[in-house]
Amino acid sequence: MKNKGWLRVTALLAMLIPVGMISILNGCDLPLGQKTTTDKQEAHSASPNSRYHISWTMHQNVPVPEDAEMLKYVEDKFDVDLDVWNLENNKYESLLDMKLAQGAIPDLFRIRQPQDLLKYQQQGVLAEIPVDMLNTYAPNLMSVIRENAPAYENAGMIDGTYYGIPVINPTNIYRTPVVFRQDWLDKLGLSVPQTLADFEKVIYAFTNDDPDGNGIKDTYGLSSEGMNVVFGAFGQIVFADQLYFSIKDGEQVIGALQPEMKEALQYLRKWYRDGVIDPEFITGENKGSYKHLSHAFINGRIGMTSMGNYYHWIQDGDYVDWSYGSNGHAVETPVQSTFNVKELTAKNPEARVVFGRPFSGPYGQRGSKGYDMLMSFTAIGADAVKEPGKLATILRILDDVSANPDPNEAATLALGVKGKHWTWTDTFPQNMVILPPYDKMFSYQNAIGANLGMTVPLKQTGRREQWASTLGLDQDGIYNSLEVATPSLAKNGAELIKLKNKAYISFITGERPLSEFDDFVEEFLAIGAAEVLSEANERVSD
Image (cartoon, rainbow, N blue to C red; front, side, top):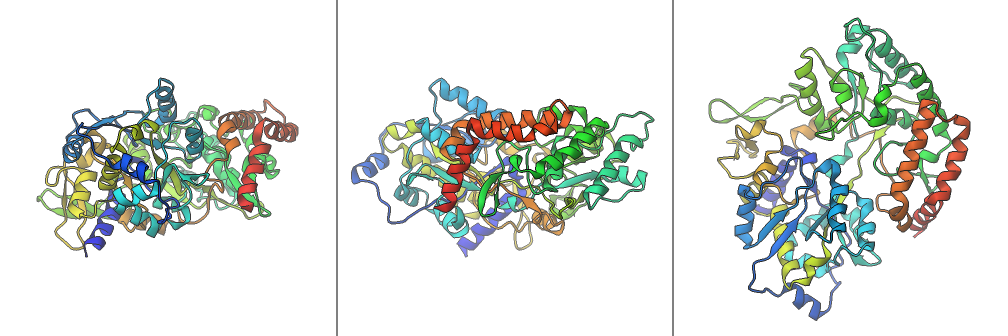
């Protein structure tokens, strides 16, 4: 019963805390028979008298104060000093790399992009994580990984050595939504488009027929994130912070190089020339602050997007969930709008949004961007293993804050103090309810130093996820078929993405003729993509 209670409470924690606010752990190859040498095991597990100073990186939307209440709770529990590195999530890699260049390596090392694991291992900033130590000092964590993420058990191994604990996001079964301004569609007498031809009619109307009714020609059909749904109508994803691969005729291919992208670019090029695409698409839809906000959509510039995730687009009353009522008890109430919708309706109370299925292309293909199930890695910094016993302590803390088997303690570590930050509902099965004023605070868990751990890969059964399922968001996702970098991708990936984006922008704006698409493909292959493809397909054959 205790284990079942923990599984239930963990799933509820993942439901209550948006995925953007918490990491989600997952499994690597954990062969139980693998052992390190006796000397190494004793060195790792020895406990000196000194109090460990442990530097810690994590997902953050707001900084964690040094004197944060729950940070001190964990420090006192394990007799350690925790130094949380406040690295802004939007700039995480650049800020982390700056620290590394200065010689500072975090003890608990969050690797936000899975394809960076090999890069950091090659830089020598990661420690080997002995699997027997994981099983000994993080048993609850490892148990859930093996039971719920077997397909990813080998993901964190490099040349047979374990370097990263894979972070698997169970809610990434839901693709990015395709969002339209419902009030604009209604005003113009249009329906949610089902085909690429329908979509073209809608975005021209959004641009030319004054959908906001202000008498000024200041609206557009789409911007950069919406373009991925256009590419999806031809089976690929192009604009992302990694190269998207797909399987074609049994081989790995890079989506942006496929010949059908020329046809997709013809549409985008025409739309840009006709003024249907927001000319600011080059700088993206987000203009700062929380990275999943589409300011172009919020500010009424565009009427369609595919930005963020489903929980960034909840409208008032989309489903019923628990909240803390004025009577001092938890009550079931209609949910309130979140993130993009909240910002949109604050500016325009009459605005409404609607989700549509990704529209189909000329060959029956459709899809929007799917975030990788393998979301990130948690690793151990190379310097952490230089102090005897420190690795064992880090793993014990990680196990406790990520997979504590006691429901009350798990909720405390994730949400704060019971009765102050949260409480249980009176009904069974019990749900957790965030108390005022924290229920209205953005990322309050960061502000109090809670939620230091990683979410385990459990099936999500909360009402928010049930709502997402009713919308069909678990269908029509286009996922990257190469989740972990090859050596050449680790080396050349940043340059390849830069060249790909530059070329596509040039094709869309007309700066470069589409007749040069094949030249772009040859350039791309020559600067390293050919080697990447060779390595990727060697991995497939293995």
